[in-house]
Image (tube, rainbow, N blue to C red; front, side):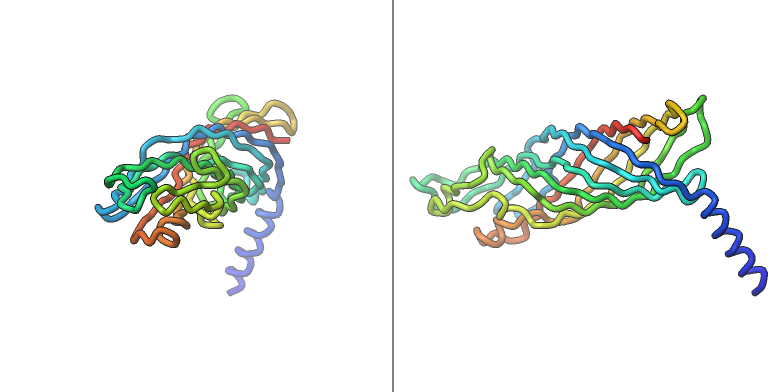
Length: 229
């Protein structure tokens, strides 16, 4: 028991010795698209991706020489274009058709990840791997470029674009990159990351249109460019 306590104390002292906080800024141009699923009667399909540009502030809390907890606050863009089979009552009436819809969403996002750093692979250069998750809250939504959507297949009913998406998004994050030491406390980083949405974003088709088993989820590939102080 005494050995266990001594070992735990030594680990705690080691973590304290390495404890260090680094703050930085990051910008992330990205490509996003929707992953969709539904019954064949509505046949939701992802059609095209969307280019977005996001950024914010982040914090790396090192609890070991090569291990850091990462979080921050970011404004990120997500979205894409999907299509589905429409069998509603159009005004004027039309036969069943495939309808496309483009959705653009801006999220205020908080990542919660673990960063694993290698030793130097070149002078002042380390590779890092990042795994974890994030939670985001939509602050702006556009459907087909507008704040409001008029549905010709639902009696021209008009809805706020924000009512089309679920008010919370959460996902998994995986990434890797390089960090280069510029000076005593200044570092630059570049990397690639993938953000895999876990939440069904649909807040319109099942609730308002009565469609069944519609699933729409975010996917994002991002180029991460940052500066740490």
